[in-house]
Amino acid sequence: MSFACAGNAVRERNANAALEDLTITARVKTALLNDQQLDATRIGVSTVDGVVTLSGTVKTQAEVTRAIELTRQTPGVKDVKSALRTSDQGPRTDQAPSPKS
Image 1 (cartoon, one colour):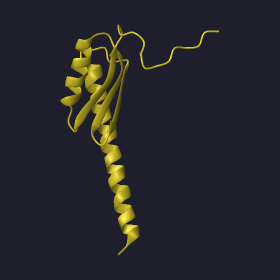
Image 2 (tube, helix red, strand yellow):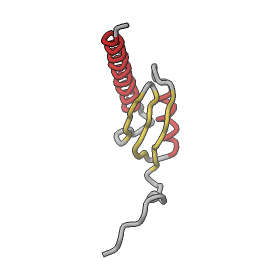
Image 3 (cartoon, one colour):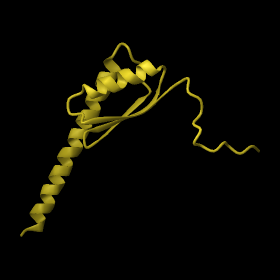
Image 4 (tube, one colour):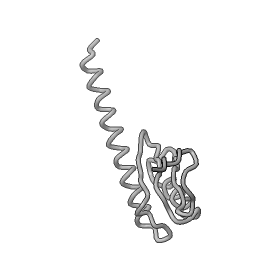
């Protein structure tokens, strides 16, 4: 049994998976930025194993829905996770307030 060959196969698979994730990220960003119904300039996109995570801020809930819809339609996307917020949402309640001086 050759462990060197097994290691090369794992590295090749990891490289191929990483390249596919980069391709998916680029496709999603392109789709979001080209959409006329959406201001995607503040949307972050990351992909791991075909699962796309959207983050950032958009103006409305309709833009959140549209971003998720466009992402799901993108070839290669297995699942979509959204951490998008609308600009009218207040500060996060799970963060401690800043100490006052």
